[in-house]
Image 1 (cartoon, rainbow, N blue to C red):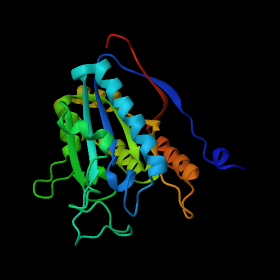
Image 2 (image 1 turned 90 degrees about the vertical axis):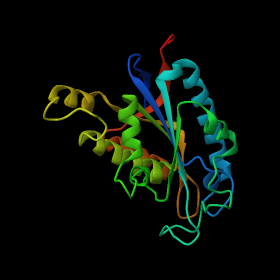
Image 3 (image 1 turned 135 degrees about the vertical axis):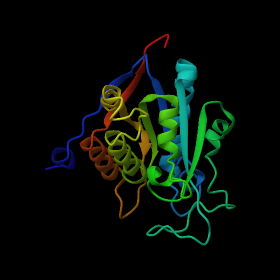
Length: 240
């Protein structure tokens, strides 16, 4: 049996709901993965960045202020390793920077940059001093109910983030409603918050020990098995 038979994945066209806030989450579209360094794969990552750039501009034009964007950037200190990975994204090397095709986002309204030092952006968004999670606070602050995830790598940073977000949603961390005092709204926020993964907006690397197509497929399967909605084509209602 093929991998697709063993681990079936279903992608569907999805229309963004016209009456809720939309959050676009861009994972690790940084130079360390797209252009240079031990973990870079320009052949596959640069085309992905171009697709993300086009998607972001399209969403901004269609949604205006209803769209919020959060960009995770893998950022490391030279003397602090991230086992089991080789040194990458070290501050001062240029690898920690946003890919040149997306640097315009750094000055764009409605964009939050979150620097992380670990695979899982949900964990990396935790402030060690306060315990506050920048991702959760961003979702709650803007009342976001459509969370669209793109970036790399599908089977590593993207899947770790998405799986954690789904558990966080179900644990009530993405709503400001109280499960005791505002039970109905609390439940509604859990049910009505969708975590969407746009397949063509994600990518992974190719290596002798890591088959790109298989790894991408497995990453999608893992996310779908936890409750993520896998998107083949993103549709936006005109006028919203």
